[in-house]
Image: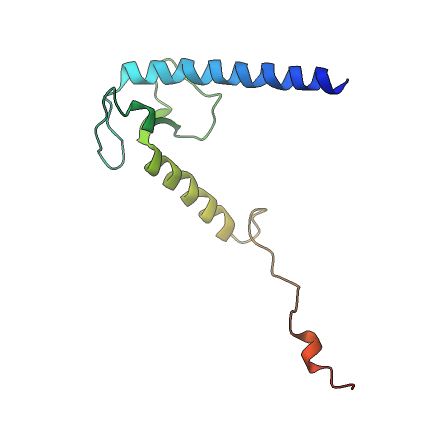
Length: 115
């Protein structure tokens, strides 16, 4: 596969994803009041772009027709929701996302007294 073919494939995949996102977003905006489910901020036509659809189970492919996996969140609460999950995953012992201890020792050569 050449570079042009790969670029075309990536563009098509992005377009398909955007179409899918628009589809469930449009349905969610018709189903639910335009209010953030966390902070309660209300939205209207002027700022609706700041209201996002959050997948409760974090699976973007799980889009039931009744909207039971969705909640509308403002961009700030949505970012906070995902950040909280990342922090929690990073603190679970044995988690693949848990930070590994550093091995770099910036001052190790200061103890070298050979001069």
